Image (cartoon, rainbow over all chains, first blue to last red):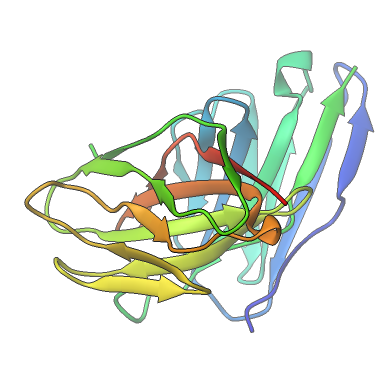
Length: 114
Length: 109
């Protein structure tokens, strides 16, 4: 089974802090994704990585950056956390072979910025 | 770009009732269609999928058929259980997926 893990389930940070959210997948998937989930808005794509060192902005990249130095790890960085970044953050990965395009998700990190 | 519209919740049912959650999509080409489920405190899990028109995805008693003519992918289950209480997301796309806003299902005994 594909396993996607996220470094923390719950995180509380102060406004202005630099925050790192880590995601690791164990299935050698090329593609990895970061989403945030907010009530009434569903999932919104923050950043997407095609492969190691390759990234593309999603729908809401402002205030975020990412790093993909190794294939299995995709990090989301909040350079200076703000209260409007309080949310559930979900990481996902996907293989590029095959035809179904399904994504596999981690358990999520609920981030609170105070 | 692609988009997904799904019915707002919550959907409240009694155990053993029939479930339908509507999902319609707009897309360029013929993308794959998915239903994901999120149980409380967890990430999303793939429930079922369909990759081309008229395909039926099924899993755990849930079914959905890829209807190109109506651009729909409605989720159905003949007899829901309390354990089916969760949030259900419809999604479509190729490399990147677009998700609906989610429908919360509450099943009471």
